[in-house]
Image (cartoon, rainbow, N blue to C red; front, top):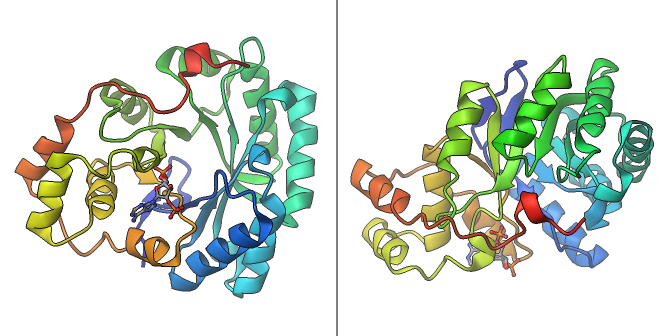
Length: 272
Ligand code: A2P
């Protein structure tokens, strides 16, 4: 069983889900999602951009896992931002998913001049009970503050790039203060931190893989993760992180790897 985090409104969100970014090959995507649900994943993180919402819905139906036991996240893409545009984009996503509601709906990136209205539309979807949790993605503190100024209900999740070389300590502290759960996208640094010498050493001490050590580090920092993999053995391996622990010293060693290094775009100079 994957443990869940209780969000501000009482909704339970699994601490680990399958990320499906770059799973554009429909058959590959479907097979990975079905595999994940089969081995016990109960969360899938997609986006309109990923072009696989149809497969997410299909995987849920094929899995025979009751819909209400699965936590589905999707996001409104940048070109669809704005109040009315977001409401329309949501309808399209819902149709592709073939679902009656989405668990978590996010502004994908804070598009200048549009992300506050986008969030207001997400708030409306929340009031209408078409989504269970309103949230944002790739928001820095200054973006969150702009959203707070216009929102009745603050975002309950912020999904950002977060991995051992980009620990996001300040943002995490701010989110904690405002009861916003943090989700890490590319929690394994797109696979680019798996060879790190310190992490390799800790993995050897524990008899685990470096991916498992990193995912466990996130969990012990109270961060939700959505590792992406299309490889059945890795999909299975990545959820086996709840039966061991990093010591205080190992956590400290991991925390010291931060060098504010992004592998993805910076929300402040994203090429919108
Ligand atoms: P693949 O999909 O071919 O299995 P992130 O979620 O940080 O973006 O990382 C995703 C990348 O890491 C993918 O290239 C994925 O490869 C790879 N990956 C995922 N899990 C593991 C694992 N347990 N061991 C090694 N590589 C992994």
